[in-house]
Length: 280
View 1 (cartoon, rainbow, N blue to C red):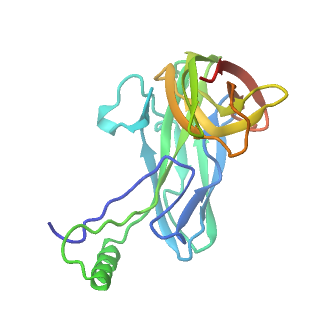
View 2: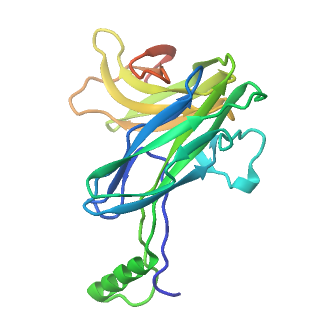
View 3: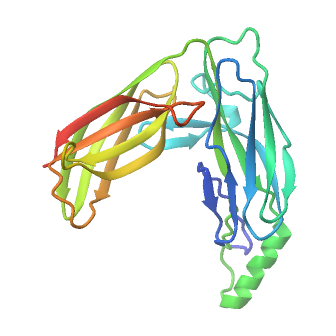
């Protein structure tokens, strides 16, 4: 096997790091939603590393699954349940260089086709560093000389990020419920399982909180932000093992809530789903 094979890693996270802690790429928004009269958006890409970086942007497509979150779908394998926005959302620039500890604005514009059927459309904006393969090979050689390892595969992680870009047309609605909630406590951990059930013709996006002993003795066990349910599925299944803080009372009852976050104003929230169960 030849030395110098390079793997590119693209993560569906808003913030991430490379193999070296000093290298990082951040985007100011976690998602973009065009709805109603909105036709433009500006996002900011931040290079928080100590060196200049060149980035490329493009589109990717993902399908949400009930148990594995997002799965990449090649452009030539799109099915009717994946409705892309690539023909209606334009962005610029597509390639740019950002100095160390600096940023670059990316402008997005929506041109809504007049004959577009009502529904929700989605693609994922893809941002990654532009790799200098020769430089990576040189780094691999230096690492080999340093460690004394001969041959094998050189694994170099290049940070990347995707963020959903959503277009909604029409009066779309959705509701969410929590079903099948179960919980047990053992060895300082709460093990819980349940399903989020979505009904309607649009996605939902919100935060989940796990609260022990709701009421006078309540305490927050865990919170998870930014949980989406996209239109290609109507159910997401969760199985979690949550560590309980030492010294907290026994968790006799567990309450799980899914709080919707407004797409245009993150300070606006509603509580569409809540469930409680006894902890065995």
